[in-house]
Length: 95
Image 1 (cartoon, rainbow, N blue to C red):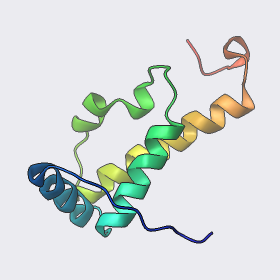
Image 2 (tube, rainbow, N blue to C red):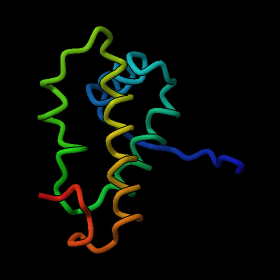
Image 3 (tube, rainbow, N blue to C red):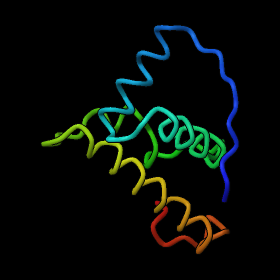
Image 4 (cartoon, one colour):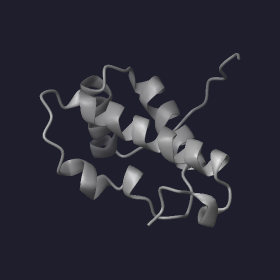
């Protein structure tokens, strides 16, 4: 899919934080912002421990970039569970 260029106005401190997070995740600024937008759009209103940033902070990781990977994997698992078990009552993993 072809990408379209857009103009975006951000506060300097936010831009610095985006650049730092992108670098930490091994991405450029554009990829980081695209990734954040997709995650925001795909995120459901339903609270989930799989994407809870507070729980992710508790993970002990050798490399901080792996936190992004773990968050993505947990989010994908949640989406997969939602598609396989659309009725929460049928989900054998729900307690």
